[in-house]
Image 1 (cartoon, rainbow, N blue to C red):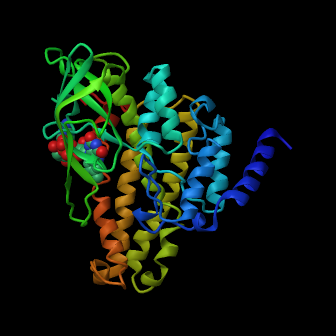
Image 2: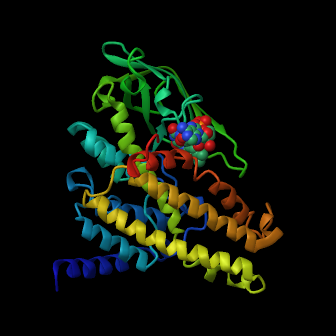
Amino acid sequence: MTDLEGFRAETRAWLEANCPAEMRQPMRDESDMCWGGRNPTFKNAAQKRWMEVMAERGWTVPDWPREYGGGGLSPAETKILKQEMARIGARNPLMSFGISMLGPALLKYGNESQKKRFLTEIARGEIRWCQGYSEPNAGSDLASLQTKCEDKGDHWLVNGQKVWTSYADKADWIFCLVRTDPQAPKHQGISFLLFDMTTPGVSTRPILLISGSSPFCETFFDDVKVPKDQLVGELNKGWDVAKYLLGHEREMISGMGLGGQGGALGEALKDSLADDPVLRAKVAEFDVDAIAFRAMSERFIDELKAGQAHPAQPSMMKYAGTELNKARHELVMAAGGSDALEWESERSRNGKAAREWLRTKANSIEGGTSEIQLGIIAKRILELPGA
Ligand SMILES: Cc1cc2nc3c(=O)[nH]c(=O)nc-3n(C[C@H](O)[C@H](O)[C@H](O)COP(=O)(O)OP(=O)(O)OC[C@H]3O[C@@H](n4cnc5c(N)ncnc54)[C@H](O)[C@@H]3O)c2cc1C
């Protein structure tokens, strides 16, 4: 047996012994996700146990170094772990912006004490983060951000406003872009700051969405004092950290194109398609695109782990994955007919299809819009003139 075959056998046995049966069911809605944090809420004992045993083994972040709470696995071992989890339908034990966004940026730009402190807490699910990038006048043109951060000698003083801050009202800490040099060209006066959401002067106001939920907030900073050692990377070089993190955010969002744990859409919708050859053809076309996306995604992850991915490749994946996910939900709605629009009833599981369909409309906005991704692809991958 090769080392990797041995690792697969061990992993399979360990997962069989440790993944609770309830954690092998597909997630039904957001309440099935475990976000950890300072005051975590668990849906049941199985969810808590699953997060804890995975964290104990470093497998909430299998490819992070062991000294920061990770599993220290190689890219090939990490892939095997993912395959073995998928084989039994095991849920992701921990959803976390710390894992998918901040962690990679800290691994590259954080100092040793920041890595030791924050990465370990993230890996154990002890800290929940939110992302303070967008402002009322800085979305696609993110580098126009105006949140002010002044050096007050023994601390930073932050004043300003963020918007669309996902789960700001539930997060323990924020990773935040602030302007530290208002005189410098806009990309050169930005820094990357971390602070606790319970710091005096931080407040949040949830924004109610068309889907009926409030997953994000306006976030206000009034004279927020932040310790000096919570700035990541160099002063005024936060744009580099921000862009690197965005690559990882886009990689994470592109995963929506994989369609969760479900199989082919044609299989899921087969009862509704019998009398509609046009819709059937569209679903077949979608399933072919989904297979192609899955293959492209696997190649991308392999290239990324081998350090061979083009830096703008996450934009390509994000664009393809989110447009695909939107197409999936359009087809689900088309197959469901007017019944799929039911909003509040037991039969529609409280409007599950309609609410999910509406939520996907945001996929091509969050993490940078599709138009912005196309601009990046045109300029940096295709090198089109004038892009
Ligand atoms: C579900 C969701 C969650 C989010 N979570 C967070 C979060 O946690 N933290 C955070 O900081 N932000 C978050 N955002 C904000 C998100 O990053 C911004 O909405 C996004 O970057 C677009 O910015 P904007 O809304 O200001 O739109 P604008 O930038 O005003 O864009 C409006 C329209 O103009 C188009 N446009 C703008 N510039 C160009 C251009 N140069 N070329 C072509 N078209 C252009 C855009 O594509 C878009 O269609 C979230 C957004 C959503 C929808």
